[in-house]
Image (cartoon, rainbow, N blue to C red; front, side, top):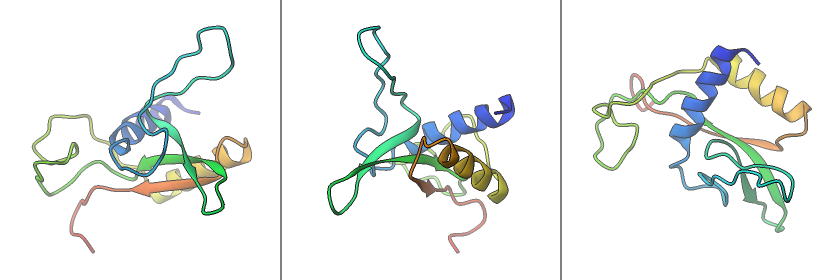
Amino acid sequence: MKSETLNKLKISANAAKYDVSCASSGSNRPNTGKGIGNTSPWGICHSFTEDGRCISLLKLMQTNHCIYDCAYCANRKSNDIQRTTFTVNEVTELTIEFYRRNYIEGLFLSSGIIKNPD
């Protein structure tokens, strides 16, 4: 993965952690050497299907730019944060790349509002 894409993924996925959708969203658990695996506060989260299966989702925002200034939102216009935007092709390529490697089973995509809500 290119460093530019990885940087965009970190910014976008970190911005998406506030969307309440996943059981492990925003958790950070480094490997202590006594087990396997890590969790990061950005990127892949876990959710549950209707039949109770736990699935991994790539969780990111297409953009964290927004024209609105909602006081409750971490991605509001007046908040001084790093901003980024993925093209549709970039989101598609990332999703397929993670899926082919069996890292994820789906995508949770949200977005800020660049021009208008439509």
